[in-house]
Figure 1 (tube, rainbow, N blue to C red):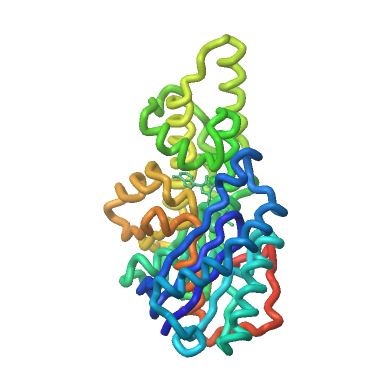
Figure 2: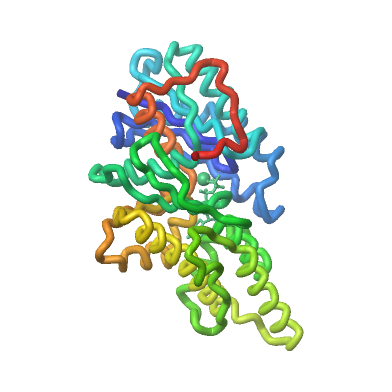
Length: 333
Ligand code: ATP
Ligand code: FE
């Protein structure tokens, strides 16, 4: 059962072919990072034009990599991200998927991008069975989901302001480190002293399952201003290490709270920030939990997670049609 997975919600065009639930036959990503880097963030109109250039050649290469010569006969399903994301970017993926489904007479299923992130864990771990807790921590989202079953999710808590990835990107920008900031801060953090600055851990003492990253970002801003006023060279690695320590602690504290509240010790993470070494290490230290961590390349946006969520949804009876339209603010729950 071959599923063609298409992802274009933000600045990566990704196409995959998955056999069944987790046998990856093709996994291609065309990244626009270099195109957007001079602007310090994703420029939506530019992103949709880049998707348009990339998507069909990527589908062709994916078919070639998977050894599919007759897609109408050999593919069984097309899964495509239908939201949340940038409208112009989503449209390119959804319109392409619909055109291919029409041409090849294949069923199509619109997938929620966040459910896609969650499914990165399913691809990586055959033994992950619901119920489990999943921390979705990405460029646009920071939330803790209770997966009672596949397709049956409830929201345990979310960020009140910035997403964790957004905080990483903004802090990197104010330190002049480039875009996207997460991976850069992550590697610098390992060269710095995490005790050099004591940044606040947002909502640490609250029982509520919620996140807030705007105060932490501002605390870094003030520390930088202070150092600049004193004409001191910025200790970049120390700032990164101290910021990362507070950010990881903010995430871990609330995952701990979610485990306490639900009594479920099966914990998965996903989304771009789940590639973070500090977060992965902190989670791996939880010896009395059953922890699921996808490989870093499956944490950031990819087509495999979308094909996996589509396959699972289709097997549960879900199906879209050619009226499928993107929903830029489609919530998972
Ligand atoms: P969303 O999934 O919420 O729609 P998105 O798809 O743009 O947002 P992802 O691709 O899932 O986001 O993740 C990108 C984010 O992850 C960026 O903010 C990036 O800085 C962050 N990120 C990537 N690698 C790391 C890392 N090693 N440490 C911290 N953050 C990271
Ligand atoms: Fe994402």
